[in-house]
Image (tube, rainbow, N blue to C red):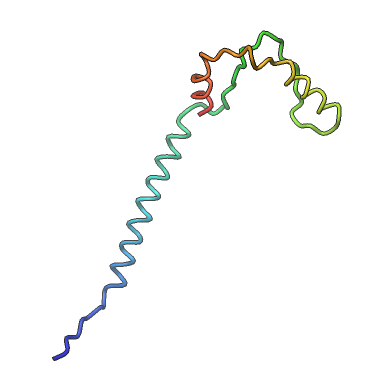
Length: 95
């Protein structure tokens, strides 16, 4: 004797599972997005704690003069004189 298994409704069950998973992912994504936008709207600034005055750096480098100006600004900061104790706070500010 053969048993006939009725599979009607299994497609609806699969669709329901997919919709529940999508809803969970959407809510989790919204919570992450909301948490990320809870802080300030301006980007954080990071100080290199260097004693050298900061040179003006062009917003975009379009010619050789801008490149030289950016290079001299980078050279003005002595990375060996950075205050290592504030590194964690600087990294947390960026995050």
